[in-house]
Length: 292
Ligand code: RIB
Image 1 (cartoon, rainbow, N blue to C red):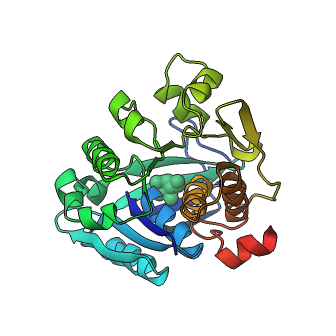
Image 2 (image 1 turned 135 degrees about the vertical axis):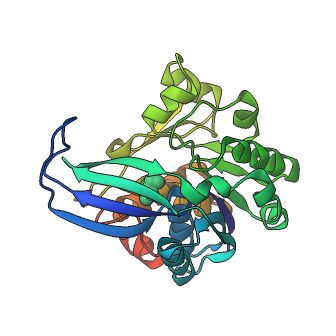
């Protein structure tokens, strides 16, 4: 069983569906409002667990109703939560999501996710060192990403850095990560002023640029490849990237090749968008295998 550790955010998604996005100063009537568990870290942990991995989550929630619900949801999805601590005097992280025109726009308020500091993560160093692969994203402090990249590099544990939401990253962190999975927008921030094809060639079998329904692009050391995604009727694309990252990590940890892992992850991500909510459509292992 693949041993995966996810270090990242665990939040509550506050989701409004609306006929369009309001202009500045405009008020419009929406269709619906729902709260569902989210946060890139928790999403990736849940997706990996549903795909059959043994998953530890390292994160932080507020000592509030959302925090209790987020923790309960992780446990219900068989994610180990020994290192997800409720903190007092800070609210749980929230993501304010508008679904309109077939896509989402998101504002994240980090809240308790800011407590996932290097000192906090250090307590789980043993779990990290005994993982087959570690996943991390950028809804937690930058210093933590730096610390984890060093720890993984020194311990010989591959680190998958999903650089979302985008922010510039040091050359050192880029060097120490085994895999980088930006979307096109994030890639343009990460490698500012550098053409995408040049970046892919510079980081063969390491940099994967996700292009939504187009597929995933990487360089295999000889040539650039686009692994196409699967066509589905999308209901909600929130969490598709998280499902891709988790499924890719599970497949790699199980010894699949780069291309096989991307195909597996594309399949999982395509299933994830067929239901509402970041985690609503995340498939089980059996569902992915049936669809393959
Ligand atoms: O990647 C999707 C996630 O991003 C949502 O669940 C939301 O929490 C935001 O952080």
